[in-house]
Image (cartoon, rainbow, N blue to C red):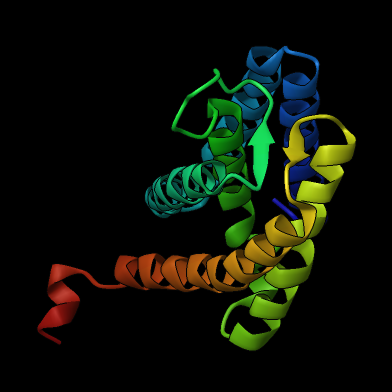
Length: 179
C-alpha cells in the first residue's frame, strides 16, 4: 500500500472513531476502523509482523490511555462513570496507528530525536482535534498537554523501535542462526 493511501486510511479510521464517540455511536465508528485495519492486514506483505506490531500498539495504547484517564486531566466520551479503563474506540485507534508504522511513518525509523519531536507535537494536536470534535474533554488543559507531549515524545520512538525489532526478527530463521 503506498504511503499516501496508508496515511489517508489511518485518518479516515481516526475520524470514524472520534466522530462515532462524540455522537455516542462509538460502535459504528469502530466497525469502520476494524474494516480498515483488516484491509491493511490482508494487503500486508508480512501479516505476522503487522499483527505483532498491532498487538504491541494495542497493549501500549490500552495502558497509556488508561493512565491518562486515571491521571484525571482529561476524560473520554463513551467511558462509563467511574470506569478505570480507556474506552474501546480509543484503544482501537492504537491499532489504526499501528498500521502506519511500517508504511507512512517508516521514514522516521532510526531518527529517534525527530520521532520524539514529532510525537511531542502531533500527539497533543490529535487530542486537541479530538476535543474540538467532542470525543475528549480536557479537565486541566495545561497538565494534559504537558503529559501528552512527554508521553508521545516517548511512545512514537518506542513504537518505531518495536517495529524495527519485530521486522528484524522475521529475518532470523533457524537456518540463518547457524550460518
